Length: 212
Image (tube, rainbow, N blue to C red; front, side, top):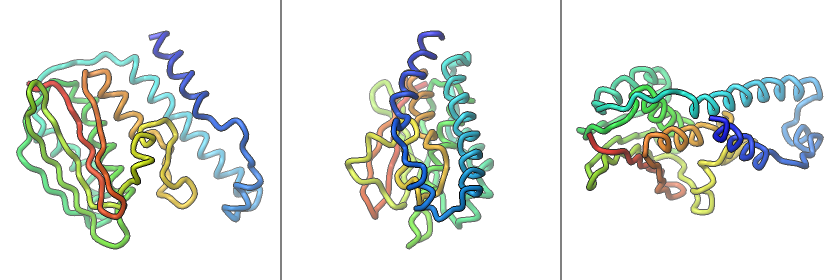
């Protein structure tokens, strides 16, 4: 646990900008000093909570067992129903193979992936999300595919880095930790995540876990 915490601290320091021009950022946002200070305070509080969540991932005891994935996805969709309905999203879920994982942690993984699809939906068309899966050798593979704005090739590895945001000024907000959390959780369960994406077409996040 201590080694994990040291590793997290090292990565945190590596991703924190060492030379930030606060005046330039405030001017670009068009905020007064008081407004900027208030917004910065909320942002720092959210970042602190996100970092604590990441640190807890390395300390929580995992309960690995068979997971009925269609039931898990149904639960995730119920918890995100308000957000999905609010953007008139169409979600298709196909029959999914089961896997070996911690159900609670895996719920967080798919909640984050669906939240990511909602945040980065295209303004030009209704959001469509397709969740499907298959068995490949010893693994169950799941995909969360959307028709959102997509991600350029040069950013596809960086999206899993701590604090990375595609558009930190005009984007949908957040702390840039959602996909970092996804990768951390899956790494603890002998799993992986990878991305296929094309700008203007959409993205598909693939989750690999041991099959049940």
